[in-house]
Image (cartoon, rainbow, N blue to C red; front, side, top):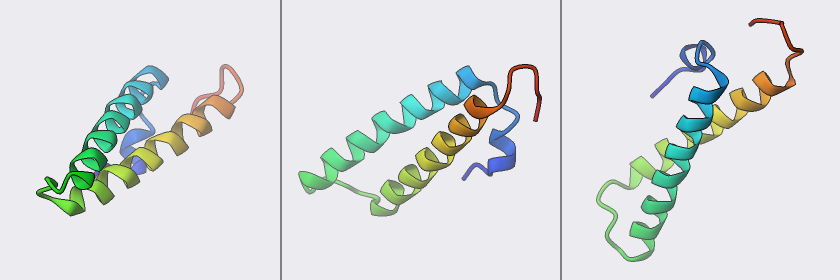
Length: 70
């Protein structure tokens, strides 16, 4: 599990790539669950929460004024 403070140091592009990767994994896990092939049900919850965490930080970084760091 990645902590929010560890994600804050990443760039906007890194967060976008991470969000895309997590969204793809989330879709695949949902598909596996629908077909009864999901081996690790807890992975679905982990990925969903991690994706939400990354999306929250993306929105936070996009709201910051240009030139402000933090």
